[in-house]
Length: 245
Length: 114
Image (cartoon, each protein chain N blue to C red):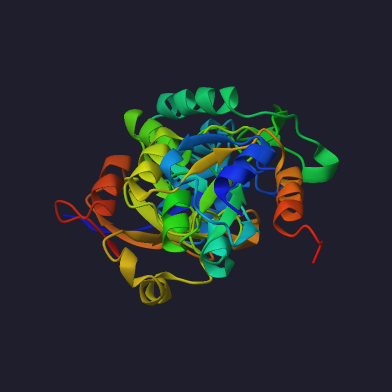
C-alpha cells in the first residue's frame, strides 16, 4: 500500500531576509519537482505569508506543500513548526508577531518579499524577522502541539541558533517530534556523535535559502500517502510508517 | 568572597536557595551559549547569563557553579526556579546589563585588577 516519499521538511522562501529573491513560490516548486521531491514544508523565519502562494504554485503538480514556520525562541533556538492547515499556522503567526519586536532594515538584513505564484511582489514584511521572539522554547513546543502541529528542533548540531549550541544539550522534558541535523553532518554521523539521543527521530532537510540548495538534503519516508498526518505517524514511528535512515 | 556579599554589593535579588548564600565564590564566568559554558567554566564560579531556560540549572549543577546571575532584570522561568531549588543553586537577578554586572563582579573579586 505505502511507498517511499522524498520529503524536505525545512526550506525558506524570499520572505526570509537571508534568502535570495529567486526563492519565489513558482521557482521553489519547479526546482523541488526537478529534484524529485514529493513533499516540501515551507518554513520562513518567524513568518508565513508566502506559504499559500507556494501551495497555489504547486496546485496540480503533485508536489505536496506543508504549511510551516521556523521560529526563533527566546533562547535563540531555531524551531521548525509544521501544520496540516493554514489556519493553524496563522494562529501561531499571531502569537509570534505579538512577541516579536523590531522593524526590518533591508540594507542590514535583507529584503523580506511576499511574492505570489505568478512571481509578482505582493508586498514586504516589515517585522524584524531575523530577531528572536519572546516565546520560550518550552512554551513554543506546547503552543505548536496545542494547535495540532509538529515541532522539530532545527539543525541541532549547528553552532548558530542550534539547540545544543544554545542550550548545551537537548532538554529531556521538551516533547520534540524530531530533531533535525544539518545536511553537512547527515543522519549516520549524527547517530555516532549523539548516542544519547538514540530515542529521538532524526531528520535532515535542505534548509535551503538559495535555489541551488533545495536538493542538497532530504529524507525518505515510508508513508501510505503524502499527507501531514502520515508524516506525523512516520516521525513517531507508528503504524508501520517510518523515516528511512 | 561569599555570595551574600556579592548580592549585597551588586544589589542582586535572590530568587531561590537563600540558605546557600554563605557559599564561597572562587571566580566568575559569563556566557549565553550553554555549550560554551559547559566546555569552559569551572567549579565554584558565579555564572552570569541572559538565558533563563531550565537547562541553565543543569549546566550550573554539572559544573558545580556557586550561583547563577541572570541579567537585564529577566524573569527566570518557573521550571528553572523549581529545578534550581531542587539542585540547591541560587538564582540571582540583576537589573543591570551583562557588561555592567561582569565589570562590577570583576572589580569585587579581583580588587587589585589582576
